[in-house]
Image (tube, rainbow, N blue to C red):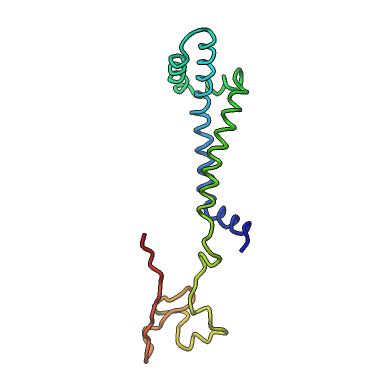
Length: 164
């Protein structure tokens, strides 16, 4: 299994989470990044006028957080270069977080999410001499152990147990 096949499987595995992540990123950019950018620019203007940067920044931040849509309008009007610069860094940092999530969801081996059992080893229905296809105790997706069979019906089920 090549790298791009693993990447495709990883993205397919977490695509709903990636969509939700993108929506949350967009909402936070509108609600948080626009007021933050407007407040920084207002603080810079206050510093150039001789006032305290931080006092102006916090006053504007609390005012702009209460009105995020008007802050977004101000960003697209007066402070577009500063907003685009902040948006660039915001997308870069959160994109790195998304990349880490995709890498962590890579399949560990090529047999991940594939049923592995001895029922796949037999051919042409020879397992049905012992097993039932329709009724009984479920052993695999298409194999069942009949409960009314005479003789030895002992089954050893081996499964990996993870402890961490």
